[in-house]
Length: 420
Image 1 (spheres, rainbow, N blue to C red):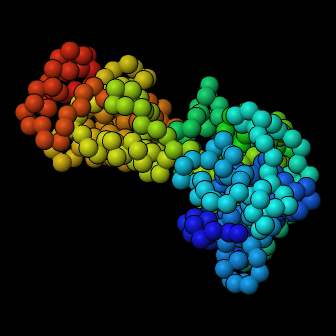
Image 2: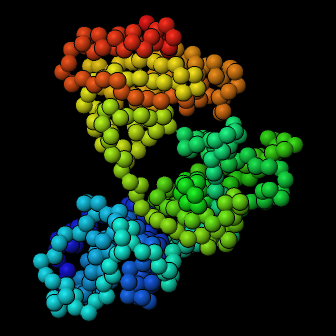
Image 3: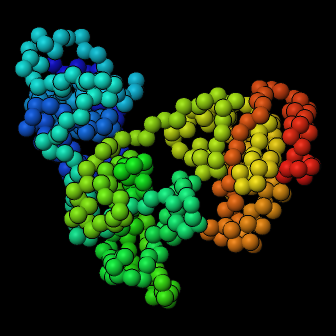
């Protein structure tokens, strides 16, 4: 018998918000897993915790709307799979049941997920593996107008840290940089299609053959006025197609040498996971070490909630190191601003209003070393750390004295980036 506690737990996960696109698209996303369960009597190994939670939520809503029929036969197996999943956190786990599933008449004979060998389980071949085609077709069918595989080009961007052209690292995975990099393509039609389709699905390398969904652009055509002897440029506009799966959908791109694929070809790519990215645990104040793009994530990304909570509780003395020169800047966050408030300013513009840091950014732009020509570009070289923290009630005079001490100790007024 399904318990009320289980039904309440399933309802806590609002699948309609997390998997946008309407009930039909939501059901279509779950179909490969459900069909495999019906064929094999086992929950597929490729199901991530997020997909399993979505499955349980769907069954709860189905059962609630029907009001008469018993719970679907896969209910126990799905909940058991969540309990056994190595990535499941405490908040993901369904409530314990007071009945023995091996003797209770409502559960005897129902297929259950088998044991997991080792911490991550033993991989086995699935009868119906989830593919990118399943996802694109399911969500595309609910789009207006309908988006088919022939309407899609899938592009995979990889990092090239040795050069200035392209994406050098994770710090370049921003809306502006991805769009500008993507819209510029080689004029040769052997390197890029002469007439690319309307929708461009963008993936970003996420380690070896793993590729994570960044987003989708709608192609409004070539901008002929920008065409050069070597490059063509396209008018790309970000759209909401696959929005609920951004940064969560990971596929296995098995041929790195081919950096783009037409929709029907990309449809064969296996989906490795559909899940929230893991929360980043706060390492302690004396172990904070963040590059600028990571600082931007800290301010906005839900994965850094623990960091924001910790940094909002303390005043402190912090250090910014310019990794391109080795020079330091010592700063303070005092009063009601706290560390999180001061660092938010750096995340927004890269210099936080500091004279010397702003001069660095301006010099980089004038020298032509800023990749996108913006004043903020030089901040990509900055590394943030914490030298000392103080409680919220510590007098400002004590914080000021500590700041002056570290400026003297690191000689940042003479050899560094402090102006006073």
